[in-house]
Every structure is written in C-alpha cells, then in structure tokens.
Length: 278
Image (cartoon, rainbow, N blue to C red; front, side):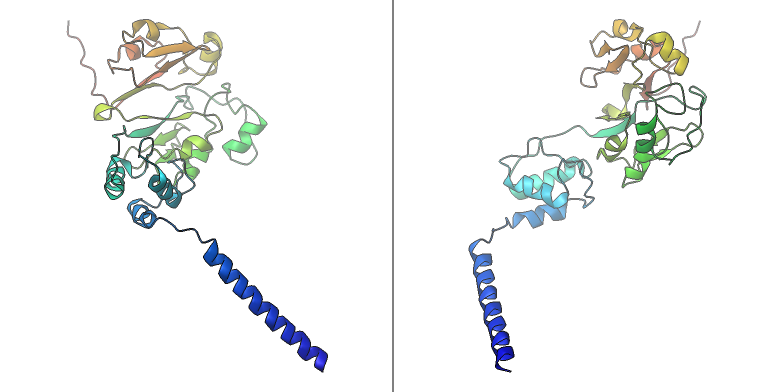
C-alpha cells in the first residue's frame, strides 16, 4: 500500500519539477519574433508557391524583415504592388522588377513530331523521362503527360489535347516557377513578359545537328545560325546547335523570326505583319 503511495508521490514531484524546468527553459531561451512578420505576411497572397525562393509566405516575410534591404527580394505571385506595400511597412524601397511569365520551349506538336512508339506506364513525365526518351523521335521534346499542369496552383498551364503541348494562360500565370521545376526536360523558362506583353523566344531545346533535329521534329531549331546573323543587337547566341534569344538584349524587331527557316522562333502578342503591296 505504502509502496504505491510513495510511487505516486514520486511521480507527482518529478512531474512538477519537470514542468517548472520546462517553464524556465521556455522563458530563458525564448526567441522574440519580429512583430512586423505578421503584418508583412498578411500582405502576401498566401499561395506558398515557393517562387520567392523560400519555403512559404511566412518564411519570405521573415526574410524580408531580417534583410537590410529588399534588393533581390521578389514575390512573383504578388508582383511589384505587393513588394511596394511591404517596402512601406518596413521602411525600405522595393526595386522595380520586370514581371515574368512562363514560356514553353517546345513547338513539337503531334503533327510536327509524330509518335513512333507508345508508353504504357504511368502517365507521368518524371517517371517516363527516367525510363526512356519519349514517344517521338525527339529526345528533347515535351512528353505531354502534364506534370507542369499538376504542379501549377493557379491553373495557369494546361495541356492542349490537340497539340499535346502545355499552354500558358497569361492571365493566370504568376511566374512562380512551379511548372519549370516540375518539367524533367527543362522545357519551361521564366522570361520577362516584355513591353506591351510582346516577347520572342526559341521554342526548342533540341541540341542535335540540323538534319537529325529536323528529322525528329519539323519545328526544331536546326542551328543554321541565320537568326544570329540577322540580329543587329547581338541578342542571339548559338551553342550546341541551338539558338537562344537573350531577353535583356532583344529589341523585338522580329527579323530573326523572319529569317528562321523552321519557324522555331515564336513571336507572342505582336500585331499581324503588314503584307507588302506590289
């Protein structure tokens, strides 16, 4: 009888001492959190998309509060307006950052890049790319299983059932980069939206030599270099049989687009070109 009572008493005393010790430790080692973090977090969209480089919106808010300036800090979902409001709260100036949008660097539609085999496994790009090159002759092209669309929290990218390619909705895309991270072929790039939403880019990542690339896809860049020669602003480089347009140097003159023999250079949101009258 007394053994049970002594045991219970010992447990009560031990529990009380442990509680006092934990209370003291919590007070002793408590980390004071910047009260501005809550205010900054309330200004963020709450998407927790990771486009800012942080694990979530609260971590981004904490990073802004602890930083000496907002240089290099950007919430792609909230955009410049959100960053300016954050700057007002923290007494810092938010730099103007060009809004960006995701672009799909593949024009290999079903007609341009017909299938030569059938994948019977899980309809997932990550799985398929780890097993083989794809259902077409182009090992660089889009697999079309929609990992990018599944990764987008905003519905900004969908797979066109007719072309088999992802399409970006400019009204919904926040340039968070989730689709780019999800693509195992690295076909999706975040590029500046451009003035008046005009932009030019090479919709291809095929690095094979011209004849091989053309055989795999009729819309492929064949590395001919005509676009490089045509550009007066040195905005286009040719490396590993593939052209690339630097958006910071491009002046959107569209001469490269006209020079490309395969139509691999895509011009977005430009008005139709006026036909020359004889």
